[in-house]
Length: 194
Image (tube, rainbow, N blue to C red):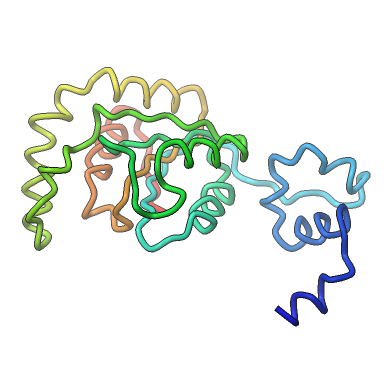
């Protein structure tokens, strides 16, 4: 705390914001005051803007780490594929996540029909158990979710930078990997797992 106070204690308002933007330029990507602060003195490095599909789980991340990852990848739309978007972990329940992403200029969309019921996620002890669940998920849910998949594909085709989200950090232990596989086949893109 003392180090932070010594370094930043005398900095206020715009000077503090400028310092953050210089050290972490991706925070300024969607800034409405960037040009006013710098008057052409500083040019943002170019950030990827081409259409992309990402997948991200929040397990083991704080809400700040999670949001920083979305911003650093210039994500424009976050698609929540949880059946019930509730979380015991601060920041990851639907309304809180919606507000946090909206404040960053990221659209939040919840597609519950792509989720798996909580009761189905019980008694999963190893990778084989997860894989069996996801195989069943593909047959019972994903094969009948054409409308939801089409919605994701349409957003992608409009040039969006989309991130599909759920809990598990490791995509191989999350059904979103099966969703991204299906979207990849329809769009020809390759999902990047964050």
